[in-house]
Image: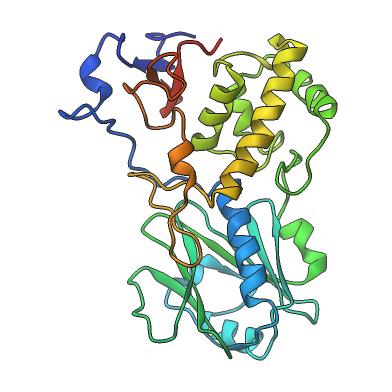
Length: 313
């Protein structure tokens, strides 16, 4: 469907409603909803935590947040005795869940949901009002889970043989942990028939952990429109899309994630990401593309903003 069909409302320099480009200063007024954690940022957290807290012992646990976010313990007070005294063996990832291996067949799993984040803190640091979990280590401070309103994180205590049942993994491939050859990618893509690319990139049965920011960047890098169907792509376009997925995810990890004016991401040490300076289209409606080939435009696709350039085909 195209603009005016009901599914999509177009906004951009040549659209019917130029005022929707943004505020009086020409900037984009993007959606203020919480964005779900995307793969690069979760993988960065995993790497940082694995390096920083593996080998550290848990001294105490406090749960200022609601019991509803916990699973696997009968009460908030019961979580502390379950964890205290255990050493963090490693921090791994299953999809967008972070898994803290505590030894003795005990796993503490965290899903950040829409907008929650994990932060390392010194003991003396003031506790933010939205803090829902504090894990005190015997050395080097605390691990805190901070959950702004409506972020809805989940914390699950489970054994290793419960992981597959309680944390189901999408069948899609993980470009950060388990890259696949482009030929396998092509076969998976072609099997999706008439599914549109933007929807497909957000489908965890196809690929893990891609949300609005990186989906837009991937499609722009591949020079493909959001509404192209999987079966319509040529071999050359499949290879471009595969390369865009892998390169975008790995570049975002390399540059420590994406921080933008309305995406206030910071890493576990409180530092903003640097990938925002490489963003080509997301949130840049009305601005000239960094390649200089055209202006960034904006569509509403299934109630979400999608950013693109006219030369994507």
